[in-house]
Image (tube, rainbow, N blue to C red; front, top):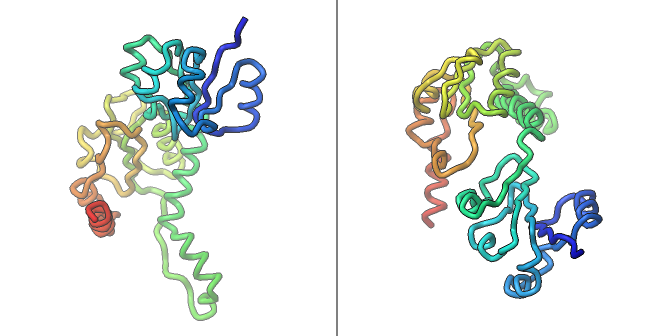
Length: 240
């Protein structure tokens, strides 16, 4: 019996590649310079596609693989997969929704602390020898700051729980109200920004959320004084 063809879209861990190769006919997409050559050789043998956060399967690829039954993304996000086309063709989609939830939440809190306490600047201050001539200026504490979370999914909720440990009141904006969690809900992003010392964006990138953080939103956020300047530079770069 011919082994099922599994198309791996990009290099991943050697362990994963080895395990797939033991069980299936593993086809590495990056080994083909011409897509037409790949399709001519393998289009009728591929039953599964394996991707990650950076690469998945668009509508064109899905249409080109008539035997495709499942697409697996070794990541939380599935925005690199055309879900509409998968639904149309009855193709199953899987991902790893909780594999990095706790780690991302840990990093989010560490970034907040780094920004408020200006740890990178403190490090440079010490390394440059400036400490010999005076103390570094005072920084801002995290404890007790109001934290607004844009997107209260798995990661957003994990961040909220960690913020509570710092005695931070937590509020959020999300597609649905979640009364069981006990956090204050705001019906718009602007209202959330108005009432938050710290604003954490923890929502997935979709057509609906793209550009959800605008100049208008950030102008209501008291602790983002440089947002307009940064946004202006981004605008200039994208126009030129």
